[in-house]
Image 1 (cartoon, rainbow, N blue to C red):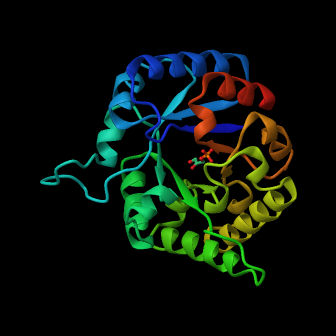
Image 2 (spheres, rainbow, N blue to C red):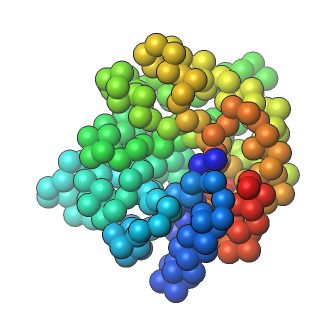
Image 3 (cartoon, rainbow, N blue to C red):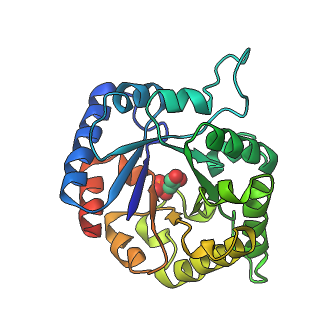
Amino acid sequence: MLVVANWKAYVENLEKAERLVALSKRLSRAADNLIVLAPPAPFLGTFALKNKSKVAFSAQDVSKTPGGAVTGEATAQTYLSAGASYAIVGHSERRAAGDTDAVVAEKLAHALAADLTPILCVGERERDHDGRYLAFVREEIATALAALTPKERMRVIVAYEPLWAIGKTAESAISPDDLAEMVLYVRKVLSELLPGKNASRALVLYGGSVEPENVRDLARVASVDGFLIGHASVDEPMFASLVKELS
Ligand code: 13P
């Protein structure tokens, strides 16, 4: 299983970041799970460069620019150089801050050009009875991949993160049955966008209130390849028991 810890802006102090990195290294030694840490940018630079463990690092976002006179931006290339191997793109919290589908597509292209593995976040704000949310998710995936070559499309990891499930508790997360249905749907959409039979090989993750209490049931969904974890990834006991539940 791929476990991506999105620290968001929860971790603001180096000692806490150090403890979380050390914990992740211990956890990844004991289990088959691959832990990918997405710390705030300055901490990523601190830890990823000297990293010799199985833990990998991800940017939480990349600039939509290729660099130059753009104060405050961190480009995909910068993250690569600082030791990242993944980049989260299109997170709903970045979309809420102004990233349109077109911007997400640009960021995706920059991440791929810098040789980072992109984790493309998609997901509806709410569910309706007519199934319009399915068309919404399809559109998010299709516009993000539209300008990419078949080879590039195959490198994209899709994380299904419905907004209604983010930042709550295990009881509010998706049910295993609904997750199974949604992962199949994402793969169906990918089968129309990826060359040949590659949709079955694409990695599909789920994010939204994954906690130690629900992770094992969600992981039983055979077609899900891992999870994107927010608040539970910055609480040491919670993260430790979540990863242990997966082992
Ligand atoms: P929570 O796990 O806090 O719901 O956050 C999910 C998320 O947004 C991960 O990217």
